[in-house]
Structure formats: C-alpha cells, structure tokens
Image 1: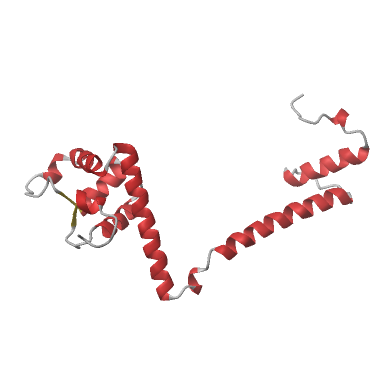
Image 2 (image 1 turned 90 degrees about the vertical axis):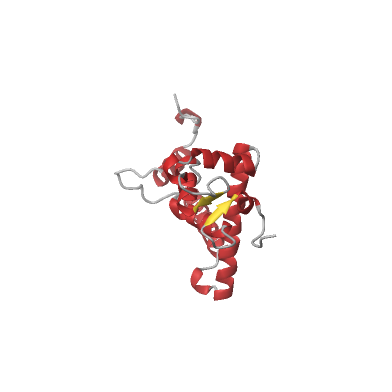
Length: 175
C-alpha cells in the first residue's frame, strides 16, 4: 500500500530478486544476504560504491592536509579563515540590525549593568569579556572560541577594547 512500486508490477522473478538484493544492501537485515547475487544488482552496487568512493577522494584531494602546508601557507589559510569569520559576523549583524552602528548599540544596551559601571569609555568601547558575552549569550552567533578569534581580529590596536569603528572597518589597518 505504501510502496511506490508494488510487487505485482515486478513481472519477472529476476526483477523481484534484484529489488530484494538492492534493498538488503541499503537496509541491512539480520538474515544473511541471498547468494549468489544477480549480475545486474552487483553492477548497480558496484557503481554506487565507486561513485561514493570517487566523491570522497575528490573531497580529500581538494582540501590539502594540514601537514603538507608550509608555515607561510598556514598563515595565509588562517588569515583567510579569520577574514571569512569577520565578514560573516558583520553580515549577520547587518542582516539582524540594519547596520553596524545599531548592532553595536544593541550589544552595549544588552550588557549587564555591572560590567559597564565605573568605566569612562563604556559608551564607546567594549572589553573582550563583554564582547564574548555578547557573541555567545546575546547574539548566539557562536561559541567562546569564535568570539575570542573575532575579538583578536577586530582589535587592531591591541588595546583590549573594540568600538563600533573597529567592528565596521573592513581592513586590518586603522585609518
């Protein structure tokens, strides 16, 4: 009733046997597979296995192993990943809040009152711990490790605080 191909539509015993063998390969059961398999079922399974194997090999060949990377290419790959993460973060902020300034204001307003007290620059800057809290707890953009990587990438001056200008700047050089 629920099968797309009913057993009555399979005219010959060979078709039924082939379907049974294919289903046994795809959905293993506790009973042993029938022996010997039909040539058609064997060819089909061989093609499926070859396609799967070639797809896995293609994926492995396009992604170089980290041990084969030179120190210079590792640094380039890390910088590329860092810029991708920052771009993704910025686009998520713009998508959620319309622009970077609104997003920064929302993050600052979401901070607990105790973290902003006693700081003269609390309106303009955000510390590393405040930024990490905003990324993980307020924005739910990622985990603490991602938040640390984003902070390091955005803290161009290495002063331990970032503001709306640092989040909005697209290059690593302050202008």
